[in-house]
Length: 116
Image 1 (cartoon, rainbow, N blue to C red):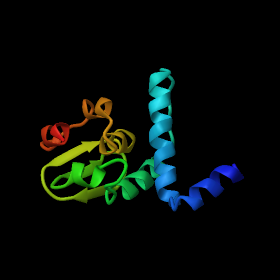
Image 2 (cartoon, helix red, strand yellow; image 1 turned 90 degrees about the vertical axis):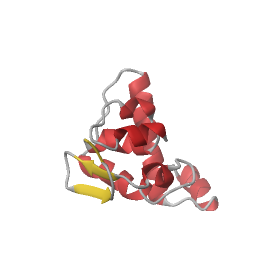
Image 3 (tube, helix red, strand yellow; image 1 turned 90 degrees about the horizontal axis):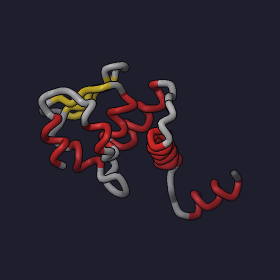
Image 4 (cartoon, rainbow, N blue to C red; image 1 turned 60 degrees about the horizontal axis):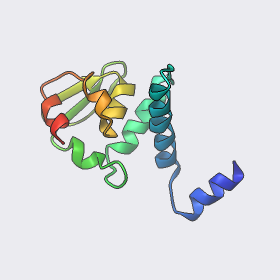
């Protein structure tokens, strides 16, 4: 683990970004293996707080521009415009660009998010 953290620091990566990558990719792997993957909702919210302002890698800032995002299982909302809502785990995956999560969203902003 020390070697991994050393590599991360040398590249200038910040812990919130690394954490979000781990959560998103762990969800991808679990889905591909048909295994359940669940963390406390606060962990998904931490990822959402990071991704809402990030453009590089995930492209999420541009993807969610002009939309209101709402986690239905937590007190978390961001943005303004047509609403997209779903539990935090699926919302994080949708913000990260995972097409499989978009089918689970609801709200008047879903078509806009799907098109991006």
